[in-house]
Image (tube, rainbow, N blue to C red; front, side, top):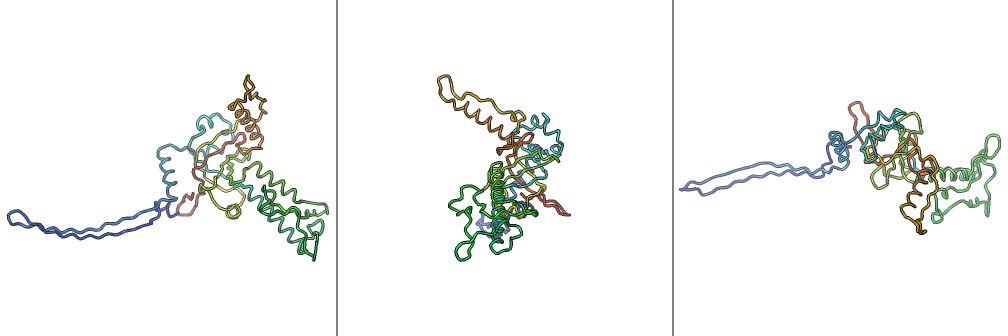
Length: 321
């Protein structure tokens, strides 16, 4: 924040004072006397987080960035030809809209924590009201190790982190949620959204109109452990601003299953380009159905340069990437 307010962070300051005195022999016996003094100040600043606001201001002043925040609040604009023709893929845009974070790793960690807590409560006899049966016992009264418990060496997928536990019991006495339900949720989460941090923006009241923003790790996009990020920002909608380029748009035609294409030539040899085109068409079809990590009609995605929230105060507003 200081870098943005002050145009950088001062890392070095230097103050130099000089005093010069010089006497020279002149022509025909005249001598020259010179005296000078002065002060010089040097300050070296690290730009750091001030770089992006400087870039954003430069893009604004040059007319190179297009703000879509207001237009995207209108649902008809999403399906109009104006959006795709005036803002083709690669266009620099700024979009401010409500959005929420999502990470399959956080889903797995939270559900695993709940399952462990539930098993722990059973172990001390504090969960009998929600358990369908008492925990198995072995040896000297110690709870048996659940068959679903995994060591770090045997965890291959996120759902493997969910330990076995006795299913909870509904108020009517029937069996309720169990470990397989939790594992199913994790499978859905990691299948639809590649594990990692995602930001989904919803400019309209219709949640089928969404913008996907994949926040790559190591690029300073809210880098941190998933548990810490969601403890800070939660899972609900907040107002986010994204600056980046349009990645690609979903196409309504992709909702129709593609016809099988012959991936070989007349001699029976595989044609690489034809094969890639066919597989990609099928991936677009899966994405249109919601089963792949790509935009779903009528949405699109943005390749981010920066993601930030506005820090509002009574005096001013400061952008915090």
